[in-house]
Image (cartoon, rainbow, N blue to C red; front, top):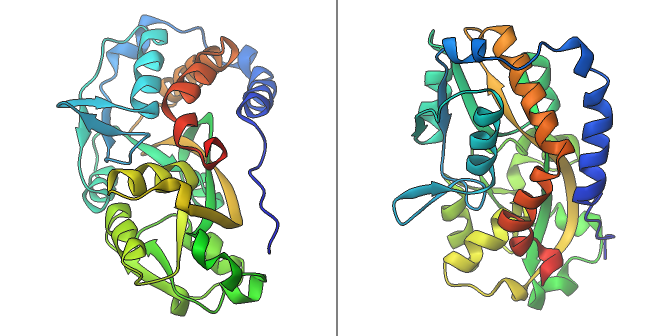
Length: 267
């Protein structure tokens, strides 16, 4: 059986995040009302439990986090547009200043775009039903079976670099669709962020305790992307706000409330 690794703890992530960011603190401007003079469009999609609707209201880790960031930046609450990912990408590439979130910050994205990362990481894993765990005793076995995956998933380049091929993938248009395929046995494996899989598996009527992690693929920072129209001072103010939230342990509290209950470690 491939070794199961859940990566570093949230507490250590916040410490590392803070240590790296605090070195830049003196280089960043003081948070001021100047940030409020710039209108930035905030776009997201439903990705429970980081962003989702509950009784008609947007909730989740990234929603609570962005509201705290706005408060630190002396901004009133901004409008958040919720729409499918393909439309978001199209809007992101247009002229209006735009922030797209939540985004798994792959190396490709970090090289191409400006971004602000959060202390939360997406734990990208491959999961199976416990009844099938004996089928996956070696890494080679994982690479010779079908894996449910969202077609536009940011993890695809990571999987390809790790020796998987498109022949392995049973594509779906969304995580919810991927979960349904996995439940129906279209493929014995599913790949994605561990808490996201667990949450959506439960929402679709499954019992998360029946799932097991058979391999860990990567840990990708959860962050916010900005297009070229967003002024750099706005991004720097947002970085400083994020740092204050991490140092005050507000990020830890949000993680414990919104993400921890759905992490496989909890089962």
